[in-house]
Length: 197
Image (cartoon, rainbow, N blue to C red; front, side):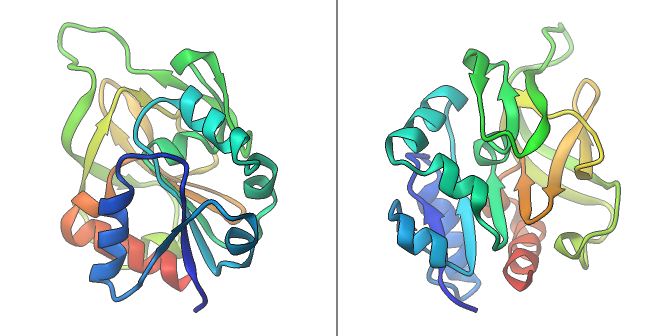
């Protein structure tokens, strides 16, 4: 395996994602250099925060078209997953447009605390090497106010006031809405699977 690159798009969870790879014996490097990202064997798009500022940062770095054109396995984590979609209700932001759907805020309901913060069960929707060895029930740790709909891109869903995409794939682009770095053995397994793609 070649170099694993974390795209330096200003996400606040970059340190913890990097440490999660270190625990797997992988020194994932942080970079905004086009050449290094293009040459990496695996690319991770982390992110915590809002869709608009994250996309603005990618535009300022000149990385939007580069990310769209990558052919190696790419993993979006948390907000990074949401950026793979066409758009987000959050600030009415245009995103990378790799998955044809819109990310929406959880509904305002008395029985639904937003953001969702905590453990939630993953339901496998279709087989994928990314989910190899995932035992049911599998729980992951989520912190988010916006969610992607379930569609043909959904590998695993979760339910919070209704089903939403927890793990997605379209071509070589993968996403995890939860924090694999905070999801114990389940998160470590999924990151290991990603590295084997």
